[in-house]
Structure formats: structure tokens, C-alpha cells
Length: 262
Ligand code: NAP
Image 1: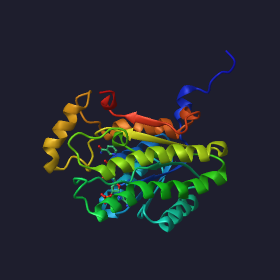
Image 2: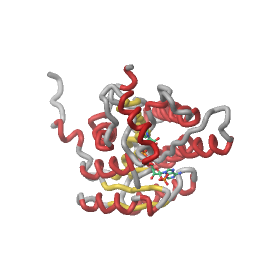
Image 3: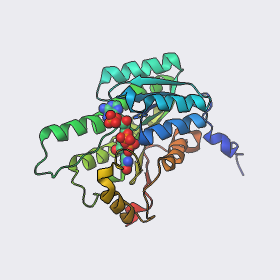
């Protein structure tokens, strides 16, 4: 044996680190923000509305004994993101981790989709990820280290049966490849960039009452026979945020209950 490894649980310890999570007021982003805090990080929680759960996220993190700040901002604004990162560093300390989960979904047949519907989704799901990474990396590159995790989707790899969402699918394929491209630009400067591609996950995005028939379909189509809980996105995020993944960059981690195997 050439080298004795760090105590394995310590590899997942995020004590003393500062994380920035977009889409932190709901669903996957909210649960990951709390999970990172439970591993020791202080968290800047960003979402576009303060009445959409952001205050709950801050309360949960403070309840876990960590510091949290709440930032209401839109990920389509470069200035808002630059200001948000600056506020994070002045209130909490040097930025070490980011998780970009802000996103939207909607559907319409491709031949009927208005340009506005296409563009507004692309602005949030793709440009929003680019601008978030840019603002975060500008801080991390100054420090010579950092881990960025973008929430993509299995829809960036497969086409969801029965869902007419060409713009969503294309945006998520874009997020996966954007993450790999940025990972290579920053690979020698200490900043890692990876993505997580969830399968169908029970969140406000897709558990609205009018979607009940669709959610049954989602369960049937998934080899594990169910949708993921938001809790099941936490372990993958902690892995990619922490030193446990120190040799991983440019990876897309599929968390899909086996969906892409079929
Ligand atoms: P969610 O519960 O709707 O959470 C997304 C959050 O992002 C919401 O609070 C939303 O605010 C916010 N947001 C939207 N646009 C924003 C903007 N321009 N600026 C700042 N915040 C914004 O959805 P989720 O299911 O957790 O989704 C999180 C991410 O996972 C998304 O990128 C989604 O595409 C991805 N994903 C989800 C699933 C799934 O099955 N749920 C599967 C694969 C991938 P509003 O409520 O105001 O829109």
C-alpha cells in the first residue's frame, strides 16, 4: 500500500465551506441546500421569489446549526448573480461549492411552440446555468479551488415518452455539455464542474394534481417502479461537492432509478 487514505467519512465533511445554491426555495435545490448544511457547510440560498419557500430553506439550515442567507434574484441576470456571489462572500466567506438547480419545465408540440415559450425556457435553463457558473467560477478561480454542480436531467440524454418538450430536452443536453466544456476550461485551475441528471423526481414541478395520470406513467416507465424522492439527490450532490470526488470533473451523474438502461 503506497498511501494511507484520509479517514473515509472525513472525505464527505463540508465543515467550514461556503456553498451557493440556486433554486433553493423548492424541490431538489431546497433539499440539496439542507443536505450540504447537514454536512457542515454554510449556505447562500437563491431563488426568484421569497414567498416560494426560500425562508423555509433558511429556517431548516439554521435549525441544522449552520448559517444561511436568502437572496431573491433571477438567474437570467448577470448583474444579479455577480452581486449575489459578492454578498455570499462578504456575509459567509470564500465560495467553495455551488449547486445550480433553478429551472423550469413546460410542454407544447414543437410545430406549435411560440418563440417566446422556447426562448424563456432557454433563458432560464441554459443561459441561467451559464451565468451562474460564470459568476461562481470568477470567485472560485481567484481562490484556486471550487466544485460546481449543475442540475441537468435524464431528458438531456433520452426523449421522455409522451412529453412534447423539445426546448426542455435540448436545454438539458446543453447543460450536460456546457458542464463538460467548463470543466475542461478550468481543469488546471482547481475548479471542478460536474452535473447531476435526475430521473423523474417528486417535486412541485411535476406533482401538481392535474399531472396525476402522468406521474403514474413516470412510475411505470422507471425500472425501479417509482419516482425519486428529493432526498435521493442529496448523496450524489454531497459526493460531487466534497473531497470524495476530488478526481471527478466533467462527469454527468445519472440518478434515474435505471431509466436510461431501458
Ligand atoms: P421546482 O420544485 O420547481 O424548483 C425549481 C426552483 O427554481 C423554483 O423555486 C423556481 O421558482 C426556481 N426558479 C425558476 N426559474 C428561476 C429563475 N429564473 N431564477 C431563480 N430561480 C428560478 O423544481 P425541481 O423539480 O426541484 O427542479 C430543480 C431542477 O431539477 C430543475 O433544473 C429541473 O429541470 C431539474 N430536474 C427535475 C426533475 C424532476 O422530475 N423534478 C427531473 C430532472 C431534472 P418558481 O417556483 O417561481 O418557478
